[in-house]
Image (cartoon, rainbow, N blue to C red; front, top):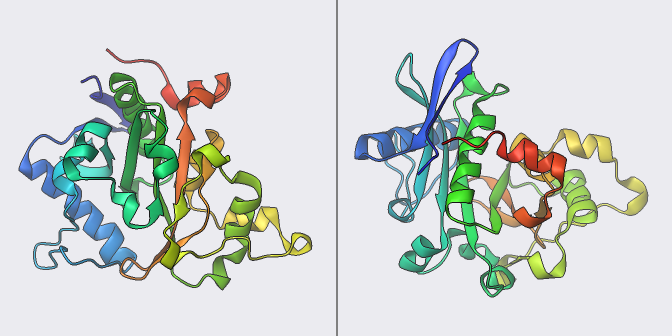
Length: 260
């Protein structure tokens, strides 16, 4: 696999690789706990509050990309990814708990599910996320992936407070029908909540998390409907990115120079 890299982040050496040991996986889960549980108030039945680990039943099936500050040895960024062969072994995709993915799984195209992306608070706004995406690009190439998808989250479960960004995403970035997952029927939350004349696009964009904006810049779409995840204290949307539809400029941003 050619996802290993070393880059400079504000004077620190950052290494990006796939977690290979139990200690590396626990370090990723510890960062997830710090962000998703301590910082954002999330929960879940397999979370280990004593050890400070955010984990779930899917972790053994995913590959976990970890960004490490080699000066300190600390894991400062994580991203977990699930190729189709691992999904088959797991019996499906993580996102299927929230979304009907049949338009994707029935497409005959190779899928890669993304999730649990987070950065240590001291490394946000810098280059670490870019380099995680660069490593992800190598992973995509190595596995001949056609479609990237995954659940991304807004903090909180107050839909009215999120009406502007949800409406903007539905109106301007809704996936075409052949790439449009839909929230499972019993949990469907409509996203088009603001009338046309009351939508403030600039204000809405300010409220959209950086990860979702990154997908949009690369030509990504959103699925139909939001999912209210009360365990994790989030409002989730499904993001979809067709790698074949990236334009030339976006493709350069996404892949960067190919590493060997």
